[in-house]
Length: 299
Length: 314
Image (cartoon, rainbow over all chains, first blue to last red; front, side, top):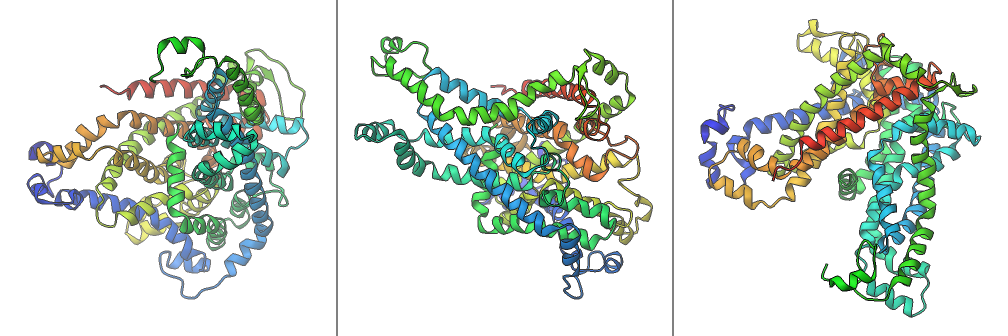
């Protein structure tokens, strides 16, 4: 056994034998190369982020001289420069407005649809569900150009309204399918007895389905907020470069052309766009991880 | 389904046979409810996703120079121009290179890393958090950070100097022989960790009994990973490969735009960036959408191929 499995890893030949005596299989010496490689990659992930954080507080001269050193003093000059050069205040407000409104609109569209599909027994329900599943295979980017033509045709090109109207469409397939799965867990007897008591469909939806689907709604909302906040190409093209309309994601790269290689300002600007996401992650790490996992796996 | 056959005959054509007889009127009422509740989201979806998707095919047959110009019928002229354009072939070659490097590196490494995380080694919680971080980064933040990092005076070259490897230093994004490579590296940087977390979530759901049995048989981790873990989640391997394939083929436009703008020359222009560039920079909407249709075909063929390759063998 040792020859076939461990020959490539001469650092840990006695692994096969020691494993038997270990309670945690993850603590064997056979894993030494794996430990090293995994943490090496983790280090590669962290270094750029570390570089951004420390650079945000340093002058350009400092960054060139000591790229990895901690800042000697805490100065927020880079932040104020980035803030005024890229109009980050307006951009943040636009991002909050677009992200929030789009997420609410997505729920307003997806929740009733999921309710209808969850209680459907007929062919129509299956067909609609299939239509939405198809959406997983359509990469959003493909339809960018026709979407622009649509925006021009309805006279809403480079407006926030069009971005808000458009965003939910990208999130609907996943939102509808996920919520439908949650709502399927509602026992039909519960609805039948409520209907016999004279409850309308809206009452049934609000008082029976919504509470049960709450975890699903939370998942979908976290996922949509994150995706809407981070969306770049569509907001760039549909929203346009005007400082009064653009989101933080569109505003941030403009610092590149304005400041060329003023890394401190670039880093500070980047941190401003990341703070809301990371604050949310610290508060809701479990839920966000679950949401991202479910979001990716459903295809 | 325990419903007797006779009763399901009473409700022909329904997906799930209703176990109680005499419900066909209810079926119809049911369809009306479904239609009423799902209509708004279906309309939204058709207007903003299905419609534009179909429009790509139509626009690819039009001569359309700029978004405000009046289009005219062009037949297959755009395709003829695309296929005789050396830029298109450069972009196609770059996309092939991108896929041929990204997928074979990312998916196996992510699988092994995911297996490693599933073993719950020391500090695995911290490791998970670190692996997860790229999933939270926006494209524009990632683009801005890596743009700075790969500048001639940026972090990478500083680090190489510190390590005494000055001769390796190069203007990564402005050097035609490293620009595409840099875009690929950034994709790998962000993709491996998140894909590993997805793998580990899936592997954690597989019963640990089979691993323990293998462990008792004296199988090492390498064998447990590839002879037991891999066949069990082979279909999922395919799913994640498809996901990364789609991302690489379609979504690379944003990263290319932020890092290199397709250059220098066309050395880092991928097919999806070409779609973007032709439409929004060079105002050749018809040409752009012809490339879009080709990209779409590449996507479908790729997905089918990957699905075939990873069909479960049991």
